[in-house]
Length: 432
Ligand code: GLY
Ligand code: MN
Ligand code: MN
Image (cartoon, rainbow, N blue to C red; front, side):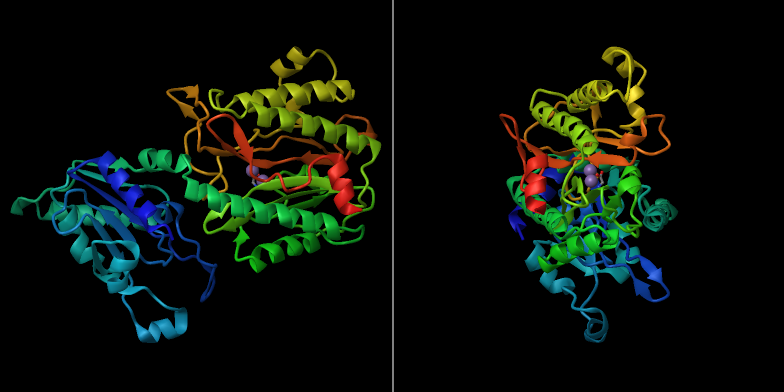
């Protein structure tokens, strides 16, 4: 763990909110699956970003200028009996050394202790609307202070959303974060190669999914989101995750799968023929998507704005669909009336980081934001021709998306998922 980096993030944040403020950030709640069984725990990204601490039932409080310590953690106490059942806990003492916390308190005492720390602070920063139970707690702490106002104490005058400041910080990835993202990207690429290599007509979609998850878990990672494995028509359903259909000879299969490594996500889509050989029609559409993707990657540069890669994709895909006779008329006309949206209905990408659809604004003061060094994004154009479309039957069931992960550098960009085969030649060779 990069303790120095977590400390630096906290002091940067404290400097930005200023003395007289208080910041409160809870760990993710545990989520029940059914009865007494819980989903595998995953720490909240904001909380992890500032602490590196992975236990549930914890609250980080930053109090810039507080004499007895600016960094406070409420967490679970050591408890040998509970630890026998549910696993080890760091506890109040060790957390101060291991995570550079100034002052720690039992999470069960938070209602008694925290109002006393909040009172007298002018501004309270927190994320609102993510965990309604936690929002209620914040209001209870504030009301508790209000009830004592005749003693001369006052609650904060302002409750401010923390998202703006914190998510702006998370948008720019540090060298350490980029290292984690490259690891996630590499594992994701390897998993796609494995899927290409074992794929055979007659297999179930979930067999490819299993191969992918196997690779992630065998390497100490997990999946950043449920994999999409869609053969033929299913490849034209954008959020298809049932993955329970046999893969047919002659169809394409679209896989969108990414590893999460130490809380950082990879996000790759590849599309390949179930039998290892592209048909003429599949090849033709694939080349359009690939050309759009390569051009968009080229446009993902500092001094270009967020929307430029998307504009490049819209133009290339529209021109490509006209050339294939799937759309008609003139390019500018088709772009203006968004004719391409029947076949390409999503945007070209999103920020990538701890969350697969990572935080950060796409517009600043109403304008598309400029791309800058350290930003990480996906480039993922696609063409999806489901059988209901009024196009020649020979194009039906061709669903193609090609998605890579890109880090903006000072001079251009780095594609961190380039290990995953992408050209027709590369894919047919890996599958041979
Ligand atoms: N895997 C989700 C996405 O590509 O946006
Ligand atoms: Mn994506
Ligand atoms: Mn994806």
